[in-house]
Amino acid sequence: AEGGAGMLLTGNVQIDRRYMERPGNVAIDGPQSNEAIAALRDYAKAGTANGAHLWMQISHAGRQTPALVNKEPVGPSDKALDMPGAQFGKPRAMTGAEIEDVIRRFAFAASVARDTGFTGVQIHGAHGYLISSFLSPDVNTRTDEWGGSFDNRTRLIRRVAAAVRAAIPEGMPLIVRLSATDWIDGAWDLAQSVSLAGLLRDEGVDLIDVTTGGAARADIPVGPDYQVPFAAEIRRGAGIPTAAVGLITEPQQAQEILDESLSDAVLIGRAALLDAAWPLRAAHELGLSREEIPYPGSYARANF
Image: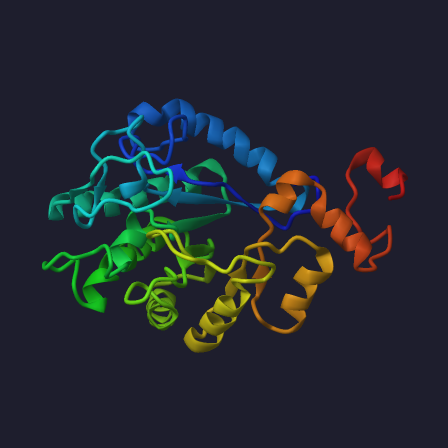
């Protein structure tokens, strides 16, 4: 927050400790989470310092639950995850009651974000985690109301979005992280993402954080700005604000994405982990004066 960020986003706060991405993740799923919830309240105070916003990302690992957490992960079907180096057990297809429970758990996690001082919520619907696996026809082979058609495969994320929206104040931002494509023929793709983004907009989602991949092994052409065209197309086709991510590392690069109206925001991940003052450096490199840049404390007395 002191480094000049406008918004900070946590990674993968888990809604169910039985199905976490890895051991040691933060889980908020009932009274057993009281200590974590108290810590999150302190965390929110730090993360909203210097005028920054702090949004909580809430997630369920689904098929990507490692054996060290649970030897029997869950998903829409029993199709195992085909990823290099994966240490996951064969998943079990969820029951309808379990799916309804997931929706309630996402809403509870959103209420924790609301009550602990976070200023927004992100639903993780990407990268092959539970919600993402329900979207993919390559993974979701169910024949009930949760699988098969586009409407059925998107039912879980739409229900989760509606439940989370109802659990937080009207003006509190709600965003969804969405893999625009699985990079696999016959799987989840951009056209379906555009359609889903429009439906999520109608459920009260304010912005789509556009990433790609994760549902299965795929040949992904990784490079600078490689995911930006997906953010641009969802923005144009669904009429909803988007955020661009993925190998966006330099200030001028990020500024050009905004100047060309390819997305409404740019989210900086690894580059900001390497340099916590990335936004301040960006402001300097993009020509703001020393007086316009919110240097914290004694740093305001120094030059780059």
